[in-house]
Image 1 (cartoon, rainbow, N blue to C red):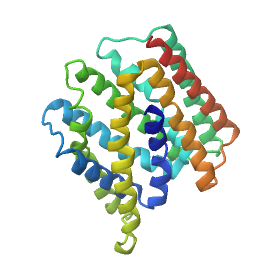
Image 2: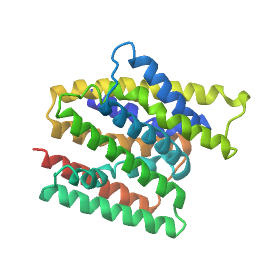
Image 3: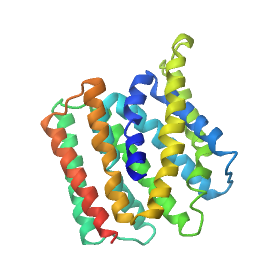
Image 4: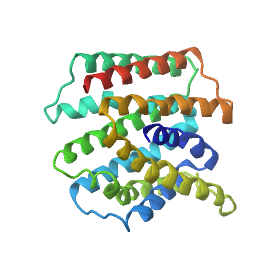
Length: 268
């Protein structure tokens, strides 16, 4: 179940690129996901709203990063989330252990390499910035989810949060219109199909699969298996879009994968 969830998540970047309008696809994603979960579970509290807002930023920024930076690089920069989670968690009185610090050091090195890659013209500066921003939004969501899950509100910060993602995705799309990036009506069907796919098969279904998988496996093993997502995303970027990583990006992929595995071991 964990591998199935990671495999579905790995297709987010390719679907966003094929949509031709990542922010519109993100908006439709949030609406489709909300429509699917609201008949099953509803929540109106600060946990659901806070988690939903962070998911809204994640949906919009990550999809745009995949289109600008490339699917593989965007996916791995998304997984700089542990670095941002550690920063956010300091406010909650938490601090990482030795393995966690080692993992954070590797992620920091990967971020530095990404910046060098962008400065040398090998990667888009905007794409790297968006990728790091998506990692920060993912890290914020993880921190919020952990905080409220300890209070027994795990469903509020998962399915209950999805309807509130529109608080962010709607303004982001309206901003794209103001910048002249809106799609024409004749092009609407492609982002519509991509958005529905993202909402159902990259949000609702994998969230459920992952939660079921975690309930049957140790958290450490589940986290390690989930690292398949950025690896597969890079593969899909090469297969479907012809995106070949440069040497800097191979180094980034290696460092972040190793960091995720090492950090996961600390959960033991």
